[in-house]
Length: 320
Length: 320
Image (cartoon, rainbow over all chains, first blue to last red):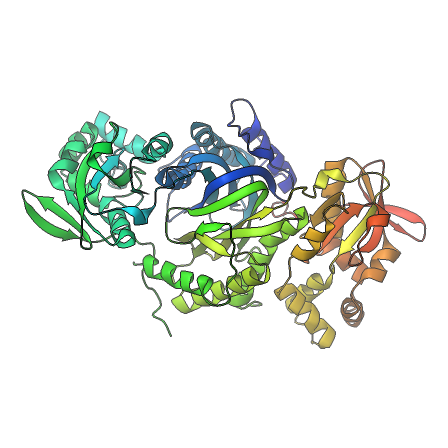
């Protein structure tokens, strides 16, 4: 086991070994990685750029996640923004704020999780920053490439709404941890979804030229649909029966077992990092499931058995 | 005065107004700014990319800085890494972690400071992230353009060492605040330097084609010189008499008044964001002052009256 605290210089060297070695993701765009004042890249064409932060006590508790999980999911959460733009990942920078007592072994676990996610997203971490803080936080910034990005603002009346990936499972997994539910296979599968979400990078890339608009579902179907409705100045109609038929069987079984509504979880629980897209029905790819449609108007509505109600509410860090 | 807490959505809209309005920095590379999952850029050629974080209680205390100062200096500290590469700023993303009680008025002050620095660096903030945290922190990531970046690893034996900008003044300013020194004009000038450091962007760009290597002085001349020595596998010899003749008159007067060594401050106090460069003496620009030279060997040495001693030590967030 490593000594609890080596120098910042040694820690950066250790991180470089974990990120750069073996089966690490590589990128032809990267001319110089960790070790100078900035990374050096060769970029041509249209790029998208995003930053996301995960803070202990706000986005995660160490009680329910290993440090590998925390590193992994923080990277996937940030990468999900590239997926939502239809972009191909280029590379990432990672800024870590570590409590004073954070040991070298803990740092290695955290970086191993980041490295695993980076490999899965084929998006190498080419630099970053270390600082001290009272609570652990990970800020990840990613660059991606896409000639025609999928924008929130491009949904059109007449579009179909598509779901790519599962919604609700992460929310159920978190619920089960918070309420210490007895686990069965389905509940455990939902917990695993919450611990190890996956950015829909490959699907996002294949949506370019098919979908008009896309967003990733970090805050739940209802809330994130609201962002598309506002940005595109349209009305989104989600159809309960379509959503229900698109839900993962493990979620349906687990919700049944815990006396929860799988539909409510899909609408209002977050952190699934699925994609919600709007596009012409005839262009819907096979991996996307229809969940509603776009109309002239405003807001997000839920249609069930031919009746509609207006949906509101998205998770807001500052509203409570 | 604003209500203490509006929604995340309203806060982002408010930030967008502060960053995007009036005399805000603009960039032709930016096709889409705040408001989608990611910013959309048009990039061609070689780019450099950096991220820097400033955390309350580690990098700053609100006792000694206004929120405008905190926003301003965190942006300049991050931009300084572009200056050290000789890069022309393209744009920036800002990830803010805010305590639960942080009010809208406080957020506006913080963003006004960032916006002022962004304008001065001609580097627009085109997106970012908001999250809650127990302590205030600002993580800034910047992209810049440069065909031949100034690397830490490119210093050569025979090069002259150049200083661009002032060193030691910020350290004295902080010392005066910590020790509640009685202020005169010179001490106040040093405090102002500490509160409002300036990234040497324009000078950095003009060093390309002249200097071989560069680094920005965030941790003091001695420590940062060590990074060049290690990366370039050379010995850096700093000459005390040259450094002393390059010191700002306000620093010399203020150090004299407070019984401090201006040379020690220049060597070991940080946060000046001056540049230390290595290049052929005949190519030294007029805005750079000679402070030593590069030899075969290793380490950083201070020469004074023909005698040498080895210098060590750089500020390390994790070493205490």
